[in-house]
Amino acid sequence: MGKRNELKKIGEIYRELRLDKGIKLSDYIDKGFSKSQLSRFERGETEISLIKFLSALEFINVSIEEFMVIYRGYRNSSFEELLKKLHTLSLTKDAEGLRYLFNEVEGLPNSTTKKIETILILSCLSSVESKNLISQSDLRFVTDYLFGIDSWGYYELSILGNLAQYINGETLVSLGKEVLRKTDYYYEVVKNRKLVIQLSINIMIRCIESEWFTKAAFFERHIESLVNDDSDMYERVIFSYVQGYLKFAMGDPRGKQIMQESLEIFKLLKNTRLYKNYLEHFKSIIG
Image (cartoon, rainbow, N blue to C red):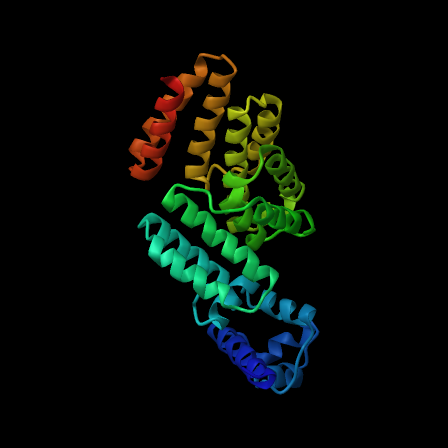
């Protein structure tokens, strides 16, 4: 799509949203826009600055994320589509499908994105075939990339979340601390905040398994500040289970009861997958 067509599409989408909200061009006069400027933007005849565009979206109460979903034709981004495919192929243990996807991505021009996506596919294939297909140089490439990023978003959080099990424990803890330095930002982005919670819980489990109890307590404190009791129901129950695991690992007999109570909640919520996963974990540590 050429630049002119892109501008026209963006303008048309904005106009449709504005009209749906019952907002007139004249309503923008005290918002830093003239009627003619906004009209030309909606027809794709002229550009406006990013700051003005964000201001215009805010005026009609539409987030940039919501706008982009419409712009993409109500489809996920290419990266989200890849993660969706990986999830489906992994659940069905479709090794052939994963190899086909790997070859498809491998045929793309060389780039950091291509390299990372092939490593993500290999991680899923490793899980399906129960053998590690990811080299140390692959992991160094990913961790070097992540350590070099100043502003983490959904992309970086998803990469780390999917590859965490293959990354050295000390390195994983360091990356986890990098993530938590940006807590204020994540709290405002629900999807990202949930990823941070899930990632931090998994790192906390790794710390407990390694008997790094001080480090586990560090992540516990941060998770507590991130979990929202009203909207993070499943995350709260998982976190409660892991808190019980930490107590149990440190010799506190109350930990076993907390884990059992969490398992009962999973049953009440009828989440069979979580219940089975954590019941298996419970049995493996209780004996």
